[in-house]
Length: 96
Image 1 (cartoon, helix red, strand yellow):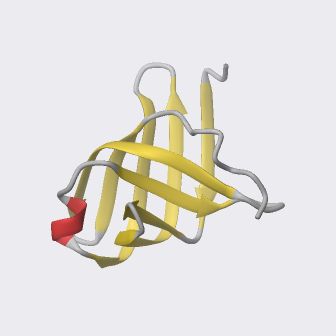
Image 2 (cartoon, helix red, strand yellow):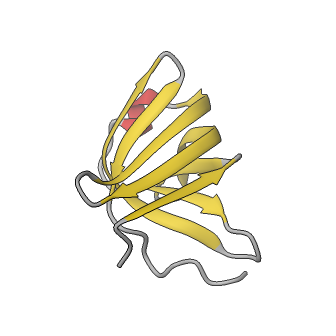
């Protein structure tokens, strides 16, 4: 497994089921051996009620097709900036 890894993108969402809790602009996911997987993103729209619920996940398109898919373990939004702790990516990134 990687000791460190950075993934960046320009669009994504945080969802609960089929409901959008946050729409992301520029985002950055970092995996560090010391801290695990973290997400930082600009937020263009947020539903604070949905964001406060459990079972959130973050998705974003992958180059070549499919999506990144991360389960959200902890999340906060302050001044339009989202920060989250993520579980490792799942295998739900098949091409559509």
